[in-house]
Picture 1: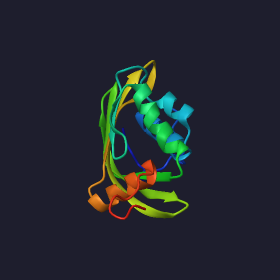
Picture 2: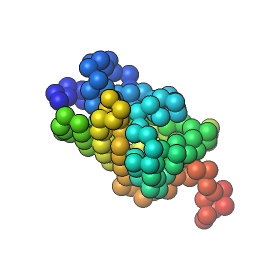
Picture 3: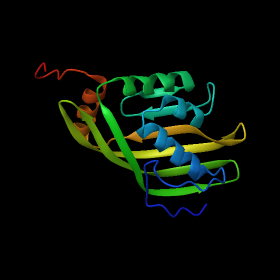
Picture 4: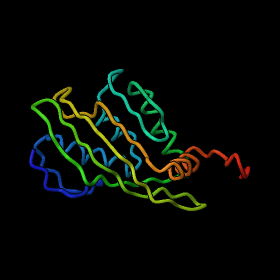
Length: 161
């Protein structure tokens, strides 16, 4: 796959060739619009998919992954990210994207810039490219704590706020 994009946030023009890159664009389009129906169309169905991210712990199966997205999308935090600095490799029925996300998490009380290491593994399932696994990590402990507080609504245990 010849990836020519330096950043993907879901606003890119797709090739319309049912490619793994098109599926990645569809993912970011749905995520950044908080579109749960769109995300369901991207993920592999059933118990096979898995996700490990900064606010969702390890989730296995679409239902658990959907619950994580529902928690994010129904809260006060609004998250928008773009995938960049990535590699792309794959075969006829699998594709791996490894890179970084940068973006912003905003609430009425404030915002933080995000820097997340990200891996997405797509496979061909039901005749199209579907997301099988996602892993995201935030290296900065202070950023991770603040992001979790903003998304999950946890109070700061030291200040009580």
